[in-house]
Length: 253
Image (cartoon, rainbow, N blue to C red):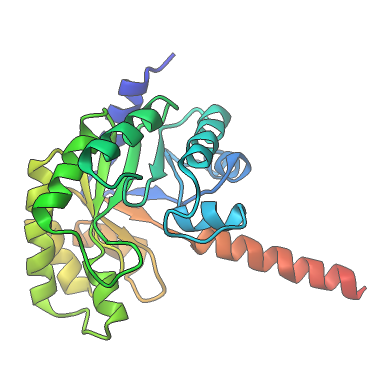
């Protein structure tokens, strides 16, 4: 039987620049089984679909106890490494983040996403503060996919996302998070091919990019040096659109 630490190490080895691991994000044991049966090498949840599936909204609105219980059920349903979208870490302080991550490790999870945004605001945590949170999470044994919301906040503010200065800022964060023990670096909303390439070339951590309608295709992202491609809430939205369409047809019949 593969140990939890071995699964974590396997998961880490899948982050190969130029040959990215594909994470088609799930929300419950049923969706996890479907993705595993499709040939996935690892499973990752998305906080948005997990929240919506429970009738809640994204942004740490799901109580930690429910996050842990859902993670445990997913892990029991598949024989693959499972990473959990843990949002900002379920803790006001680095010490609290460490305790929450230790509880998540105890479910059998091997990795997390950890955001640097201040939920409900247009700001990000100071780099040094976020690095402490990353270090606390990494100390639990989890593979930390350190996410910067820099590009999302810039998009919300109406700023140009093809500004090289944003990549400069992202790289500063990537270096600090790497020093704190992160395993990979996530830059959602970054879509310009040239900037993705630069981030991949200069980041000390393998880079995760989310697949969106305006991002390069998976093959092109591989050529740019991306090491991890995720899908966020897109699978959930597609599944719910299908259910709604089929229900409408049935109810109209």
